[in-house]
Image 1 (cartoon, rainbow, N blue to C red):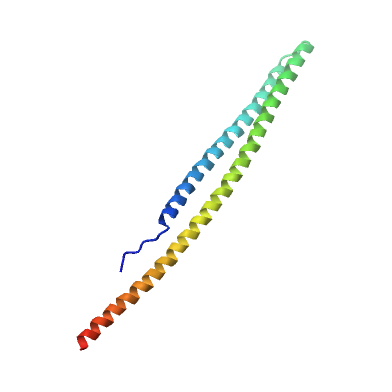
Image 2 (spheres, rainbow, N blue to C red):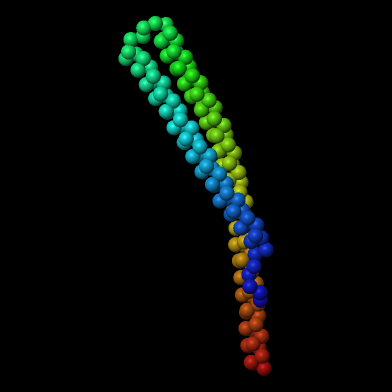
Length: 142
């Protein structure tokens, strides 16, 4: 009998490659999310420090006050922009995770199919082996 060969083995290998690729893409998106969160924290610190510096020194006129307010609004707009980017990256990560789960399920289905085919192969192999043993035994008894 021929050696066991699963005809969909290339599909399994392809799914494994896709799985690894999706995992790498998710890791990149998560790294970007971490970077954005770090930027938000930096902007908040920058806003807080600017307010402390101006509050520590006397505000002489309305120009200083306007400068502080404008700077804080500018930092707030940067934070809002980062939050929007964060939401977008979270959506992308969600899509990638769902794609990853789909690929993983398909891979499991093919692996289970391979196991069933192998079990059937082994049953057939043992049947043929027993048939050969029976033939040898019947030829000797003659």
